[in-house]
Image 1 (spheres, rainbow, N blue to C red):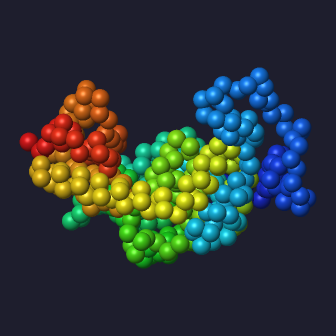
Image 2: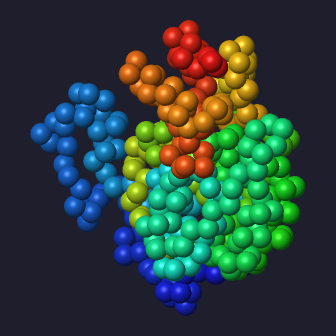
Image 3: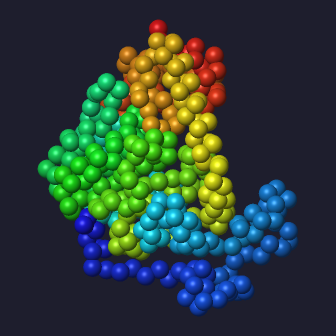
Length: 363
């Protein structure tokens, strides 16, 4: 079992405002009159009502369920697990910070791939962790995290946490469920494996790790990509119930708004929406990869909603980025020096425009 930060190990933190939904469930009946929460009134008429309609105005007025209990139940059914094995927070980024706060003391070592999702490093530095980075590994499909080197570094440093984006960002590489299981088995039992699966919905189902919690692993998911809710900030994580319960004790309880929870319910309730969005995205990704190949580029194999290409060097990648920005087009060049020669391009109709592709043409 991963260890917790020292101040959390023997201490239970109690939320002073567990919310109306928990109260209703404890009482066994609805509590429709709320005169204890000091919520604002909608009169005089809210400008939100004219702009977005009365439903959103009312959702904005009321405090959300701090535990997102109904959303947890829906997500648990989707992931073939129990609601107690799910936690909801304001996007995968907030869950990364939550995992670090949960398991890392100032001065503890955390391990990740040099140049992988940079927000992990950003938050790790913020909690006072010592960061150990492992280089990417070259392979026939491009670059991929070196899982064996990551484990070796984590075990050698007695790391509190090992971060792995799977599929990886920015390379798009996916390690199979078998490899993830091997990684976890080889890792020190006290080390939390933080498995960032933000892009997993775009991977082939047969290549993904099995559904549900994995021992010693906090699996991060998001509705930002395959459900197109990036602006709503809804993420969730899967883990064993004890880990989820401890994480819930230190999570900002009102982080996921009433509107965001309602938006999540709406898209999850439509069984055709996400599959159609995924199919459309994958078609765009393949068209983009083919267009890049036709222009002399060799895109990496991708299990995500983006394509990654390597330029000759950082200067070439920066030049392409600068030219596109001057034309009002933003693509991503990772900020880490180890991967400054990479360009990450979202599978989007605009990426297939001739103006954009002409700039991406290999000299």
